[in-house]
Image (tube, rainbow, N blue to C red; front, side):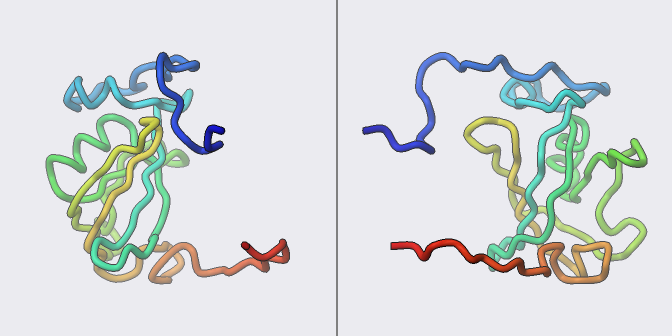
Length: 140
């Protein structure tokens, strides 16, 4: 019996999302593997490289990913401001990139960083500081 979360082999059922919405210098081989949203974005899950602590989630387009890979500074696309932003450029809370991994579907990247200061715009170390109650059944 197949495992529900196991990757499906063979031809993909959904075509990759259209190419980037903005011009980019991203390596075409990497760009071809991305499955973007209708806005040309992929989710970027950001974690502390040595502890694995999840710090934040942001969005990248092809150019933001290119800049992240070539500068070693975490660069994102702001959906609200419609511009690139380098984490720490205004706050001083920098993210120095240690590694970037593409997930199996190509629709998200895992960015491992050395976080200096708070990752969250609220001043918290991580954006995931509000625990929610889980009342479901316990795991076997």
